[in-house]
Structures are given as structure tokens and as C-alpha cells.
Image (cartoon, rainbow over all chains, first blue to last red):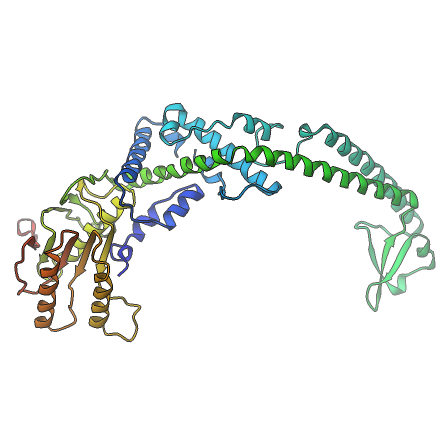
Length: 62
Length: 397
């Protein structure tokens, strides 16, 4: 069975809203990443954006 | 930022720019890249890999002022200014001469021409029209009149066409020059696309903020979940003002048999585990206060393929299992919800025991099975877990 279907991943997908065309293509082609380095890079960058939001640089993201 | 992310165009970096449309797209890409880099600031832009300096090409492409559109500026070639002036002057002259003639037509015939032609009924056609118009059949009842411009006007129009083709030639040369310049930046563009791709983190962070997601820990041997949430269900329950009970557990063995009564939440546990693992391995934060896990090459849900028409549910489930088993050497998270539920309980338990016996000997398989069957044997590396059922303390009458 399709894993995304089993865990109703569409709900997450529908709330994941990248703006650039590159992000949209990433969203449509989610792939399981099994490289620790790649995943940690992604988590780090998400943390950077979350930090920017915290210090109210949110205006640049919203 | 949002504006520039939305506006940055898609570029196929393996294809060189070749025409004016490509120049326009590259300009739009560079402009938006530069603005995103500026917005992020020096320190943050470096974190996302924004290191390319486009100043020279940015200024070159925006020589008439910064804009996302592209116009072949006269600043690229002074001859362009000259020829455009000639086109403008001669166009004015042509318009003047045409208007003079059209006014004369109006005065002499009473006909007003607006779109270089006029359709009149045959019965209204007069002989004198031949002095001013070329006359063609339009249909059985009407004729088409086109102004008979003087040779002077025709010569002016021909001259203008010469100027226009001269303008096009210079424009092509300018575009070729710009394309050559852009080609020097192709490796920059390729790196810049990676930086823009990194900004997927903006969407990830938005998602994390919306659902209170946390950063997963992917260095664990076991799967540990503290207050894990299956978001789709939590959101559904919230609509009906029903409280959601998050999942707390540490799965320390490779084989996890989850038992419990029907409607006891076994499936939700499986779905939570899969959702958290999938989100983590898609590079997203997860819906748990704490989620520690290890990485898998694949996640497999044994359920039977609904597409396999002609097979019974049990047969398609077995077919699915056989397909999975062909690639069993991979490091896989395997999920099964009530495996063999459509066959008799004796056959089902025998099958499940055989599968667990096999899986328990493998270090690369992390297996979750929800079942209500009782006679499942205890193999090594296997945990039997039971859903807690009703929270009697909090039950209300």
C-alpha cells in the first residue's frame, strides 16, 4: 500500500506551501532521504528560518 | 521575500540561454535572487548558500532601471536610439499624410475610414469611389473599400519597413551580446538554484509553526515518541471539540506486536509512527514533543494492493508481501495493520508466526504489526505491546 496514503500525508502536503517553483517541484516529488547529512542540513535551515521568525524578521517571510 | 520567492522563475540550468525569452527569464531570476539575498542579509544568506555576486550582470541587465520586465535598451547600442528615432519620425509623417488623405475622402465621399478599410452595401457604391479606394468583393451584397494611398505615402511606409528591419538586426546583435554575457554566469545560476531550493525551509518552518512541529533526532537506535500526534486525526477531533490523546512510547525491539481491542487505537499508533518517520525522512519537522528514530532505506505498508483487480483481498495481501520480500535486504520499516485479516484465524496466526520468525532473525527489518489474534508466539527481539484502552479515571457518565 502507498505509504503516504496510509498515513494520510496529503493532509501535511496540503499545508506545506512552498512559494518558489523549485519548492513546488520538491513538494510534488517528496523522496525518502536516508542521508543523515542531507537531513541535518534541512533541519538546520528550518531552524534558521524559525529563529528569524522569532526575532521578528517575520516580515521578510510573510 | 514572499513576492520574490513567488516571482523567481524556473530555469533549466543545463540548457544555455538562446533567445530573448531566455534573457527575460534569466534577468527575472537574477533580479529576484539578488533581492532575496539582500533581504536575508549577509549572515543568513550565507547559511542558505547565497554566495553568488551578480552585481555586474544585474547592473547590465537593469541599465534602464530595475524591473522584472526586459526591454532592449538603447543603452546597449547607440545605433538603436538613432534607428528608433527615425522610425518614430517617419511614423508620425505617415500618420499625418494618411490623415490628410482620409480627411479628403471624408470630405469628398462622406465616408469615414477607421481601420484601414470599410465595408459598404453594393447599392451605396458610387463611381467616384474609384478615385479614392481599391474596391474588392466582400460578399454577394457588399464590397470592401481600401484607401488608395499616394505613392508618397507608400514610399514612406517602405522606408519605415527598412528602418524596422534595421532595428531588428541591431536588437538581435544586442540579444546575442547579452546571451554571451549570461553564459559566463551559468555555473553561478546552477549554484543559485541550489540556494533557492534551500529556501524550501521557509515552507517547512511555516508548517512547523502551524502545527507545533519539532526537530526530529535521527541518531537513535530505537524509535522513541513523546507526545506523538497523528495530525489528521487530531485536527478532525478538534473540529468536534474532542480531546486527542498523544502517543508516548519507546519501541526498543525490532519486532513490535501491538495488540488491543477493536477501536482501541492500534491503527492510529501505526499511522503515527509512519507519519513521524516519513516527515522526518522528507526533511520536515515532526508532530511530537520528542521523536528519536533511525533512518530507513524504505518504508513499506503491507496492506494488499487495491489495484490488483481479480484477486481476493487475502491473495492481494500475500502478493504484496511476496513483492516486498523480494527486496528484503534493504533497511526497511515495515508496517502491517491486521495482516491476513480476511483469512481464518488459524491460517492467519500461522502466517504471522512464520513472518515474525523470519523477521526476528534480520537486523535490517523494523516491524510493526497490529493484530487482535491471540496465539502469536514469542520470538527473539520481539515486543508485545497492548493498547491501554479506556481511561477509566477520566470516563464521564
